Length: 459
Ligand code: ATP
Ligand code: UDP
Ligand code: MG
Image (tube, rainbow, N blue to C red; front, side, top):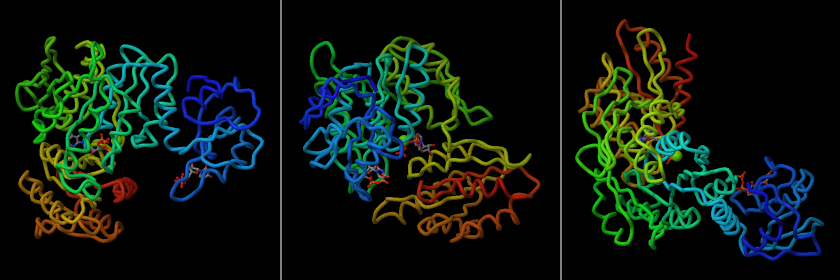
């Protein structure tokens, strides 16, 4: 974080500095957690589902906190900034630091691909200057302000992922972020329990555009996925912004031509933009990453990246862990590790990749979480899609995913225990003398990475 004074923090957080303290004391950071606080930080006490942060004030002091941000008076000899609501104060501080550093800012939301697109944009923009990007999945109403607080003076770009599991969450975070350019990567069946319907998802995601400036020379740019069933819905909401479209299927402001898939599953294509075209080779497998690359290119080019920055950035970027990582298990058996998370769109995207490999194709599916009342229906749909795409066998683990393996009849099997699944695979699959590709996928809560690990650890 940029160094700021206690009085600056009190003013920006809309709080009141209690007691007689030197308000010019410099704060080196704001921490919400005594388990990771650094000396010189202010400790901001959040009230969470498990703990009341106010109860950790003494611990914060012992670990070197130089002051507290609290929503009720507590007994302490540290300087205290009293605010109405510490969570809102965190947001105000994040927004204030962002406004102070004023980097070119990119906002990204969507049902799947946010982190991937964020990594792509960061890889492209780091060829131009210093980039701050969301770490891991710090993309909610706490994670976004915490990310903004990490900004330093030298950052020229901020690439911010915004997620949501309820209406209004992105409206809140985008107003802190105030992006110069923003996009919805896609909208699909995910977090349906919080949004009610697919249209509910599309509506919640569209809140991101509310953070764009609608005025004068600094008008923000909204980037719309022309391949989404919600493209017209979003375009209809964008009367006062600059707008650009992208498509992996047809002509748009930014689009792909001559898409081919390499043996490693990574796509090559011509990127066509309003300022010219260039050949792209992706470092990440799967045709859905063409769409991700198009939106990443559009976002990065709006804040100054050139076509060759896009080409080089995308070619050289590192893998995103747990997202479609192709691992060689034995000479003949490949694992496609996509265990990080799952929803209907991302499972279908991974099935597309699996279907492009030669040999026997097997899907190991854990449950997709948070799909609401129609959860079984969505699992069945995924099973049907896998069958239609020529997947040979589908083995499921969990409860809901049984509806997917049932579609495969004799070529499907359901397991309620991980150990049984591994035993079955070791006996019936791994030692076959033919090329086998195994896609492993499920929601975060399904912890399908344990399946990958068990297969890797099997003798
Ligand atoms: P989260 O909501 O968990 O933050 P995310 O939106 O950040 O997820 P990623 O982490 O980039 O998404 O990818 C999650 C999963 O979605 C991976 O399995 C990935 O292969 C798949 N995926 C990525 N991009 C797309 C896309 N454009 N369409 C469909 N699936 C995708
Ligand atoms: N907290 C803390 N020290 C602890 C445990 C919790 O500072 O040893 C903070 C935590 O970082 C959060 C607040 O207390 O800001 C409320 O905690 P929460 O209920 O969210 O629990 P958590 O999920 O962080 O364990
Ligand atoms: Mg993410």
